[in-house]
Length: 219
Image (tube, rainbow, N blue to C red; front, side, top):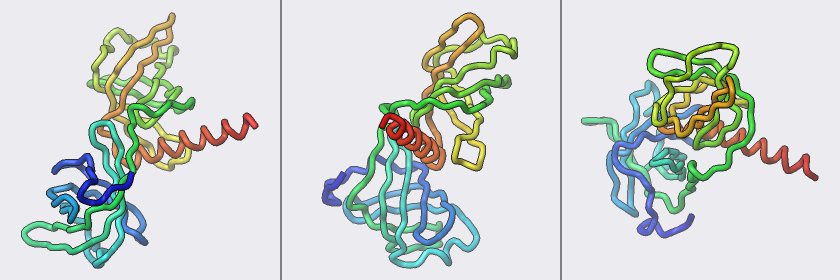
């Protein structure tokens, strides 16, 4: 999406958690938007990380990613200045363009990720059978012979799993949107929310790799 900076709407408000990736620096950092002047600059409060200030040089390029109301946003910006008092604040240029992905409309792809679902103080083992950046289908392990009557539409659950291509376990927070039961098999349709950008990136990379493989197999 390209607009003049004055026309560009970032879909963000103060308090939104940001993932910051500095050009030429490994790893990512967390920050929070505290203010902006549309078309001119953004003000971020950056987490207190030892040695971070030394890595921040004027005109550093930075990639910013964040989630807001079911949509993933990303843009590139340039560091304008940084101050430590009374708080560590960084000023960045207002972006000229932005990438937007509506997670709620992303098509799910098939998968087989062993996972553990937690609700209140109970947990159930099972498998994630399809996934997108916006949600997944979780099938409870029927051999556990556990009571599943306590699930309700609207319950907030946590899913712990590991996605192909990612080296670290992931925690997915979501809301149960539908419950399907067939004999002993119970499937929970879950909509994600509050998932951090690196996790969304991992899901999107996996989904894209599946689509590319499927397209190649059809040729």
